Image (tube, rainbow, N blue to C red; front, top):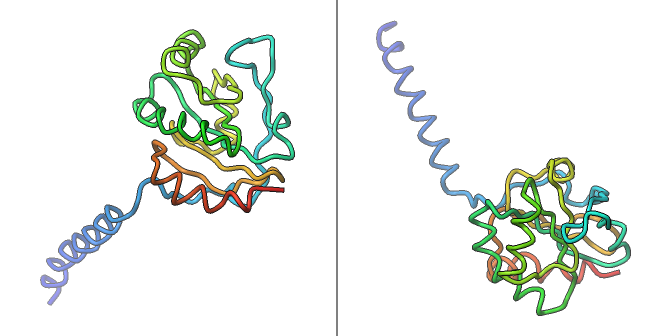
Length: 177
C-alpha cells in the first residue's frame, strides 16, 4: 500500500503541473491585471527626448485623457506597433505620450525622424525609474489615462488595430471629463 502511494504521488504531481501549464498557455499574454487600474496615474516629470533642457510630465496633460506608450529602439514589438500608433495619432482623439525607456537618446531621435512621430510629447526615461512607477514589465506597454488622471486600461505587447478598437475605443467615453 505504501509503495502504491509513493508511486502515485509523482504521477499526481505531474498531472497537476500539466493542468497548470496548459491553463497558462490558454491565457492572452497581453492581459495581465495591473494594480494601477482605477487608481491615479503615477506622476512624472522627465527630460524631453527632443530637447534635454525641456521637461515632459504628466501635469502637461492634466484635464484631458491621453495614451502613455512605453517604447524603445531596441524593442522589436515597438517597431511592430509603430504604424498602428501613427494611425491612432491621425485619428486625433487624444494625445499619445511616449515614454522612451532605457534607450539611447540619439537612436530614439533618429527612429522618430525615420519612421514618423506619433507622439504629442516624448519623455526620456534613460534610467527606467519612471517606468518602474508605472509597473512596466517590458516594452511596449500602453496605458489609457482619463482626464481625471486615473489609469483606465493597460495593454502589454505591441498595439494592434484590433486591440485599439476592442480595448481602448470603448473606454474613451470614460476617459473624457
